Amino acid sequence: MEKDIELMQEKDIERKLKKEVEKRNGVCWKFLSSIAGVPDRLCLFEGGIIVFVELKRHGAHPRPLQNRIIGKIRELGFRVEVIDSEEGIRELMTSLEEGKKRKKDETK
Image (cartoon, rainbow, N blue to C red; front, side, top):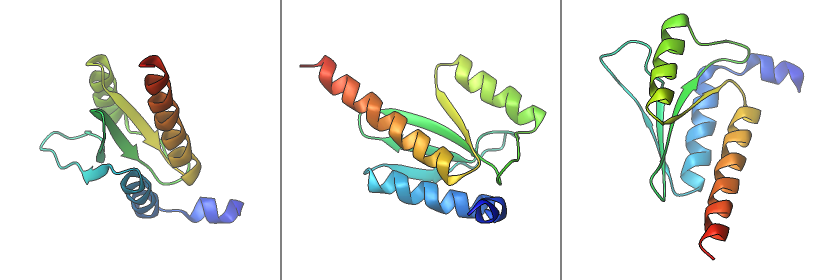
């Protein structure tokens, strides 16, 4: 199993992310920008939830320019996740589901 994780490429993670987002009635668009360093994907969910996602092959990290852009997006109040594994995708989905549940409980 550990070897499978190491062999997982960015495109494999991207495919799995898109599938998981769509299972939750969201959209996961490839984000093409004229600005270098912008995250790879823009994930939109019901209720106005927006998550920018920077995808990396397992164990890789964002470049310095990407880190600066990610920081600026976060300063503006948006959520940005860097994901390099299926576990990262699961963590994001769990976090979104928990947030949705909390919001639902607050409206009761």
